[in-house]
Length: 485
Image (spheres, rainbow, N blue to C red):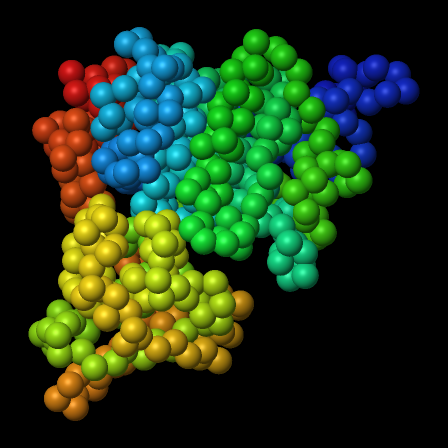
């Protein structure tokens, strides 16, 4: 689908003599980045497969719910307070908050809020945390149509995940650099520019700006407890993306050449030592990477979902009372005991990353959502006692599946005080793209997430607007519903 025959003509058009043009760098290493930019600038709603459009709408509804839920948490309220001076009556909406702001600040806040509960989608990172906020803010800012909006969202996923693929790192480097976080701002920039629309030159500038604006990819769980409250800093990454598109719209030239420069480029800067530029254009127009997005059934790191699902099923199917639980054995891949074992989480963020805490919530049958991290829950003696009954072992089969298929297999055995044993193995969590949510599942999660927020009464209306949004010429009704008007 990508026109690969005009690259030389574009380069010739921008011939600047000895020095190559920053938007149209020469050399084979830059070709694939050029193909990606051309694909994005030419992407139109009419070529999107129905299942891709459907997935984009599911992700939008899910992310809006996550943002709204985030506003009703202690951290979310502090974030809103930190930026209340930026509030505006005519800006871009921050769903669930009653607040609006300029496109940059609205994007930043919505990105952070979407990730407060670790409840947004997952696909080699959390693309919705940056793509949806940037696309929403740009769409409201330029009054984009629903079809423009959906096209931008899809473009953000296609660009971002491919940049991830092209900037891999060896295990040794991976210990020092959280390389897999680095692409999220690039995805936001591609999404915002896709919503806005523009020339190929503007797209190239936007992608270059977004790459240059990337935040340092940090291992936020490795510096001590409590964990960094803003985690992988998706707010800052999304800000870099929306600002990239805003600048490109004004023909402010961005450093497109840095995306694929093998010596001084993006991959080197973020720590990748396995840069493969061919991955930037691999499968464009044929393989839609947004389909690999997985929605979440539990507000916690995706690595822990198979365990939570197994416990949920064992407790529900066998009517096990948590007071009758003697021990719980969890057999899983090695990253769980190495990174996600925390018997005394110091904050809600630590609890989201604790296999013991998440398992305790499942043993207690606490409905997934904000209630998992209520202060009363975090300090509850019953929760603490259950966490002490959980034992973790590495399963060689699960370890192999993790590295070969990114499978998060978990085998859980619950032993009761009356001598009964119940065991279940889960390979793929509910909501994973191999075990996808139905539209009803997405709607139920959304309605639960917006309870108690300013948009609760508009929940059905918001969902209906999104379900049929491509048949409308305007997003104005969506923005009004999200503003509670």
